[in-house]
Length: 113
Image (cartoon, rainbow, N blue to C red):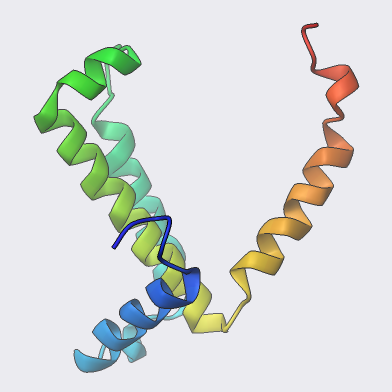
């Protein structure tokens, strides 16, 4: 599977089944999931603590890149678990927020050209 062929619904269903099979639903409260997202984001941030990497250095360091991928996946898994817990439409939330961002940050104010 890859980004080109996988829908958000596919990912949400995969996570829903994973959580349900382990009977973790009782632990997947909005509070717990929000905290889990923060913890996993902090673990991603920790990979860069007191270090400066260029994009090329990251891409050429397979161990670091694998760690980054793992932490990004953890953040995303908990984010989708959070979405599932409240039965939100992530796509609608995304586009509603992008509309607000476009209004708040118009191209004319942030274009170097």
